[in-house]
Amino acid sequence: MIRFFGFLRKINFLKITAYELYQAYTKKINPSKFPCPVCRTKHPDWKKHAAYERYIISFENGKSINYLVIIIRYRCDSCGHTHALLPEFLIPYRSYSIFFILSVLKDYFSKSLTIEKISEKYGISASTIYTWKALFLKNKKIWLGLLEDSCITAADFIKAFFNKYIYVLEEFYLESNLSFLQTPRKRINAHSPPQSNYDHDIYRQSHKTEIHLRNYP
Image (cartoon, rainbow, N blue to C red; front, side, top):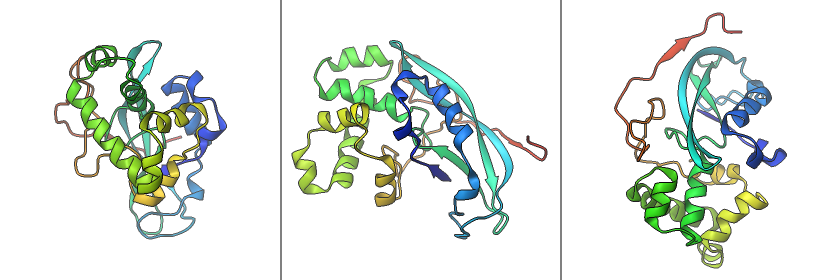
């Protein structure tokens, strides 16, 4: 897997849909500038190898929306390994976009809504909210360090993403080798459609559908 960072600083991501944001990313992606994560070849001759579908769950205009997008896998000509190229606002193995989760946590830490109201607003369970809260606080401490973490509240930390984008997601990735809010121990299937309107985080197990692209445009 290859992560693509830096684009969020150049656009107003609050005024476009998650699908439009993904489409904007695909137009900017240039695989040739990324090294291979396996063999470390700096500029391999990447070839489009296959594609698979995955869902993006976004919260727009007061409701949860599911988008189905196509992720391209590229093959390194040096070692033969294939890698998906994911933009920074997608969390590996999870359908929820990072901004969906941060919106939930923003409501939680601002204490503007009760847990019941947050669950109802976003269509998720209380247990999901608490799981995200624990992961967020753990990641925040890793990112900021013990001293700075104690000085910056969770609410202010989240506010910085939406207002000034002070904290750059690439910094956390380079520090921890994980994406921000990525669950390290358990892969949540992002390739299956949500099975419940109440809790999208519960999925049936299914095989990932992958299409080989011998003549992909």
